[in-house]
Figure (cartoon, helix red, strand yellow):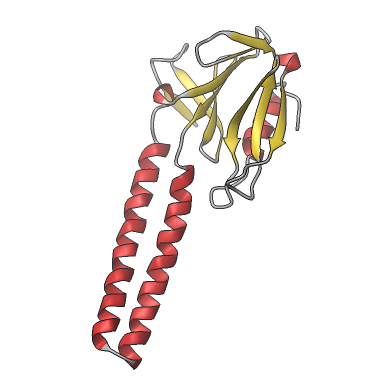
Length: 181
């Protein structure tokens, strides 16, 4: 998928991978690993969907067996949760559709110069010394993906049971010279 953007070097970037709030774009001979966000919104949408289900089913069950007023309250709760689910979906879609140029960058991998650069453009180290590792996250059962270059270790993608794992991002980086986890 090609995206036009005048703020990057040659004006056209290609989305290579997007997973768990992290995207990898190719811009000429450079890879840009950026933070897209929206990972927490997947969890919030899942919870809103559950609340919708419980509210509607509970409202119908209570209204049919015990109290019409109680049933209407349950239905109102379920409908409200459904509207929240819809709103969170729209917010997430807006986050995911932002231009690559406006997204905060983790690192840039310059394949021609064989360098890995930080968000300000300073060289962290050579691409040959860069490697990925899967690291524990206290807040999730899924692993996070860390990139280590020249003694600097940074988490570049956080796995999420509701938004996918980090394999897609790791695969693209490994295909471009970063050592596999």
